[in-house]
Length: 394
Image 1 (tube, one colour):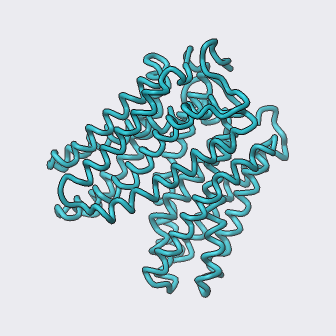
Image 2 (cartoon, helix red, strand yellow; image 1 turned 120 degrees about the vertical axis):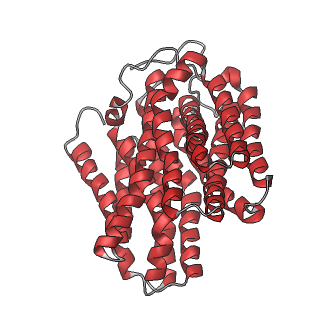
Image 3 (tube, one colour; image 1 turned 135 degrees about the horizontal axis):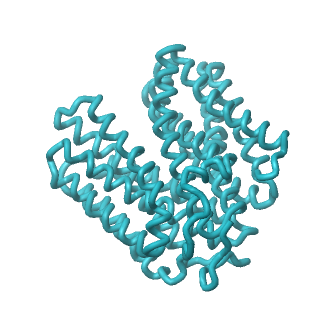
């Protein structure tokens, strides 16, 4: 396991705000770009008469691009530096965002998606590494809670911007690219404080997925449940007897829970030495909540209360999982593990909608709850193996 390099910013007792602002700005750009870009591009494709199948296939390139980018980001940052790599990613993301407006050939949108989401993924990975590497160990959960809260706010702001700007003309693309470019300012200011990846990781990229499985499995579940839930909850809600607006409002309540619980759960993780315990507790709550969904369809209010706390538990898997990662690794190993963390998240975002959608086709409407419960159940099983059997490396 590599150690911090002399001259490389190391965790201290107090929060170093320039580094925090740089990382938070990058993740804000990621959240807003994804939140605005996904509905914007889908709406434009639909207006151009593209079939739903092809729209889905084009959208799926985001997950593919994330997996590809995760495999080489650490090596690239090791060679060129963390801050310079992030600045190049900002530039590529902004240019490709404009490309969607000026390039009208649908098939060229596939490589354009790869460039755009690949660059966004690089920002995602390196901002996480930056903040994890420089966060005070005693306050890592709190700092990552701020980070996760801003990411959630970005995801919420993107669709709001889309509802205001619409899909006509160049303005939504100008705003999207502008938000991304603004992230370059604090990154450039804090460039000399960015962590240094002084050596290549000790292990092959894929081995980091299994090096800290408690963290990577947590973010896989987070990606699967979040993406699957967001994609199919309105379908589940309307089939359960709620109106479309009631189902959409329930989804908003879940998003609020996702937003407000990040910092409290991060602070709680700072007080717990073995973060696997907290991760396991949240998945048990998630499992119970999922199993209760079919029994709550008669009451919108009870469903909203459960989804508020359930959304908080789902989001907590990301924040606490990332904190657990930072507490276990350092240096180039941490950078590579962050890449594996984002890779696992991307796999979850691809698997979640597919598994949950297929479950609803096979088992009926309640297949939505059973599939989500299955994802949480997998993590609970992993927790039993990792905690009860108490292996040497958590």
